[in-house]
Length: 114
Length: 111
Image (cartoon, rainbow over all chains, first blue to last red; front, top):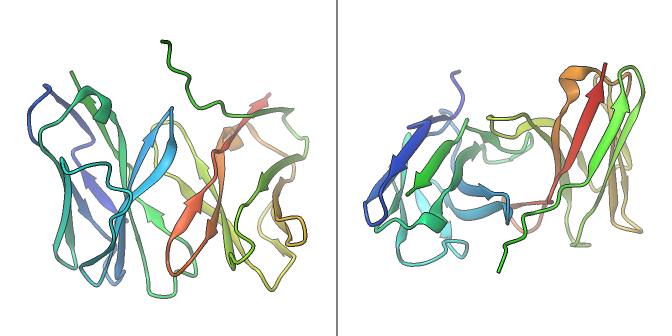
């Protein structure tokens, strides 16, 4: 298994532009999580899905952030419009129903908004 | 004003020493705990887990201890190697399928 795949690895964009981060979870995992990591706040859970349905989006910072999971093998996190304070590393993780081995994380997308 | 970054506690050890990384968790109802290792430029990687009905679990060179009375978790790494240098996070499961991560500890291993 290739693990959780995220793209792009790095993204540099100008303030005000739309940014879309992508994630392919491990096949068979029915939970998907989006995290954001910054030096200021550490690892923060933004949103998670179960069987493609958003379960808890209380961590999404504001309306500029949205996430979708149109099918079991793909999810997107969109920021529109982006702001410099959105600069962070965004991780996607997936887990199976039992979660017995915790979450498997992707390698992350480093987002820089200038 | 000047912003203050997240201060990571740092543990510095010599190669070959044993390392102990500690974590205080917050929710007495948490029933599952995990230690993750994060190397620079990578995502967190699962190391070892423990359920609340256990107080000790051993893996290869790692041991996790759980003290529910004082809500304390520790990770012991035997014969620490330079490749163990990373940031280590504890995480607790609070509610169904929702892990909450601690702030992390940086482990520096000197050869």
